[in-house]
Length: 439
Image 1 (tube, rainbow, N blue to C red):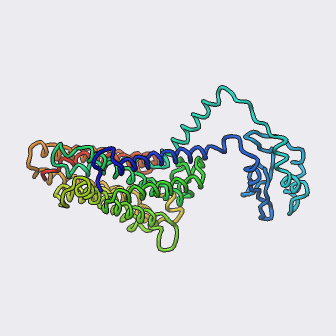
Image 2: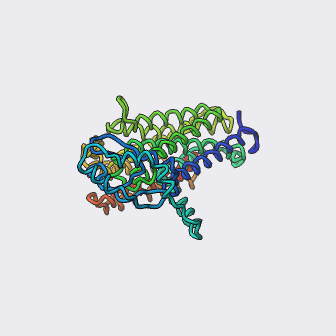
Image 3: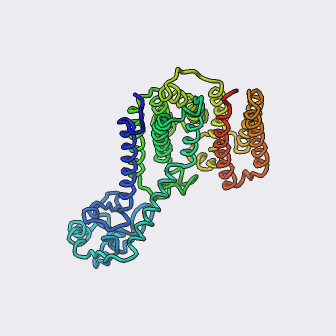
């Protein structure tokens, strides 16, 4: 069923789902902020305390860690503040010299609720609390921004919008129905993108502590529970909107992306395909080059514009060109991560062949794709399309070549900057693809 107007029931339901997603994300982010606020007594009773013999006691204890266990305890943390407790010296002695905790620790554990209630102090509201709250919200939103891997989200949005313009035959096609159909494709695709990159971070926390320590799970900005909640929320919203769209190509794209993204990251037998260079590259190429181009083109052509399915030369060119580009992204993304991948046994092409060989192979592959695009563009039927396609790809190829000459392959920051430059070339290509109508 297609939307007859922007205010029809299916469209309103989709917008409602989008609003629910935003509310859910805000709720999860607010829950994540709780450790920085006053904690309840019930939360204190769940604090796990590692003992020397490997057992885990319970109690509101905090302290400095040594060899993975707490050896020195200084203060009691209650309601977000710290308090002295007169029996701490006895507990410290017991932990240093005995295998089992003494009566002091057991009494403290048993009476932690009453002790916390007695010693707790809730500070009076201050004028700076609202400012601190907004700063905390801003910090969590920034962490979610990093968690979503924005360069991949931008690539997904630009790619789908660009491919969705290929079935358009006249300005009259750009109706509210078309725009709503595009929105109903974009939102679940972005949510699936967040699911895929979030799932990868869940299974790569230790690797990311080496390769990407600024990511929220690796840095500890988000807890593991928050990461899991965000990933599953994104998947649920994505599939819900995909089912409501009643578009087989859109739902198929979401299912394929979910399967390949899960197979790429999940560390169970027969999966964790990122450990195998060919399978890892195939996952990215399949989604970025084939699924995005064909599935969303057919969705817009057949299920939004209501026309018979016809694969035009322009979408075939876009699919072929993006096979080159997706292969380059799949290979190049591992160059900055070669140290962590080698340490954790990820056999990427950069680990097996060396970063320099992979780097120059990617450059030559992209230059070949640009040269091919210039030849194809020369056959366009209109002069303005020839100019845009030939000059556009020639300019991008020149910038790529000159930028590649200045790269320092021994500097991780330089390699990472060039990798983000590759993504900018990826975005630029999608601005040129709509000019391929008459190819």
